[in-house]
Figure 1: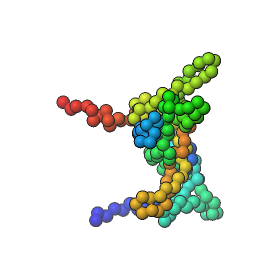
Figure 2: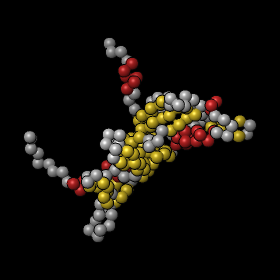
Figure 3: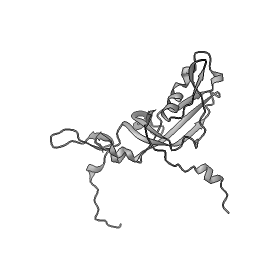
Figure 4: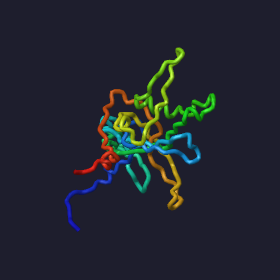
Length: 202
């Protein structure tokens, strides 16, 4: 074993924290449920922006698989910059559903509310005026849609529990509960691997 002089300080083992953070969309997985062929579901992943380094959050550390507050000499929980959150990737806790408008009955347009909220948060919703009423166009996102990948958005991270299929234990993870607008956020370039695979080398 190769020896090193560098040491690991357990106090630096900071735990990821829930909260609202600036991020960019890095993946959109579109699928059609077998039981609902007139609907589309989206799994969305986002990467926390380096701008998170300017946000102050309460600090926790991992201890025996649990999040424990980091305390100061007075026994009070400490706060610090969320530098450790930058670059971390999270996915939606629940799929975002899009229902084909032609499949909805009168009064069921509310079923696309979470989808419209997502478009609004990404600032890509199109408003259309009809009969003096403002409507939102139900534009449908594609799989890893190039118009959406890299867009800035605020993600609301919350804990969610699930049962492991492997051992039946209950586990808790952080995931994206919903999206909010990131005013003046910057779009980043996301490499589309599918497009790269289609390119033929010469």
